[in-house]
Image (tube, rainbow, N blue to C red; front, side):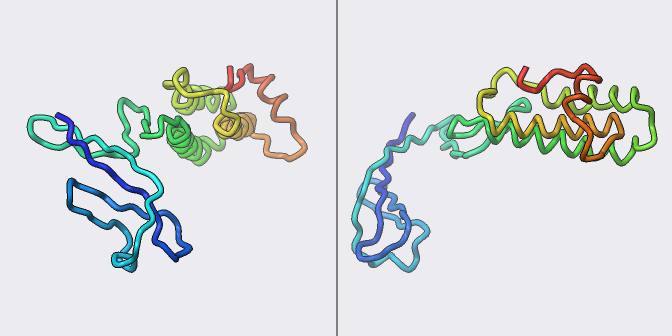
Length: 174
C-alpha cells in the first residue's frame, strides 16, 4: 500500500538562506530543520511527491545508502559510493599487507595482492560505470601503490607503468 505525501520545497521570504523543507501531511504542516524560521512567511518553489511503502502493516523507512551482497546502493543510483567503499576496503587490506609482508619475496607479495586486494577491486566491477574517470582514477592509483609495494620500489624516478608491464597486470579499466 502506498501513502502519498507531498513535500513543498521553499525558502523563507526576506531571508538569504539555503533551501528548507516544509512537510505537508494532509492538512497538517510540519517544519523540518528550521527552528528559527517557523513563524516566517514561506515562498514555495516546488513540490515533490513521496511514497511510503507498507509491508505487513509496517511502514518501511527510506534510506539513502544500503549495502546488499557487498554492493553499495544509493537512492541517486550512483556507483561512486560503491567505488569509494571498495577502494577503502582494498586500501586498508593493502596497508595490512605492507605492514606484514615488508621483507617477503615479490612473488609472495604479488600472490597476496591478487588474492586479497585485486579480488576486492574486481568484485561486481561489471555493474559500476567504468567510464567515470574519477572512479577509475581512484582504483588505478591504488593499483599503482600496489605495484610499488610488490616491486619494493618507492623511488619517485621509477616508472609505475613499467612496473605494471613487468608484473603483467592489466589496467583496472580493462
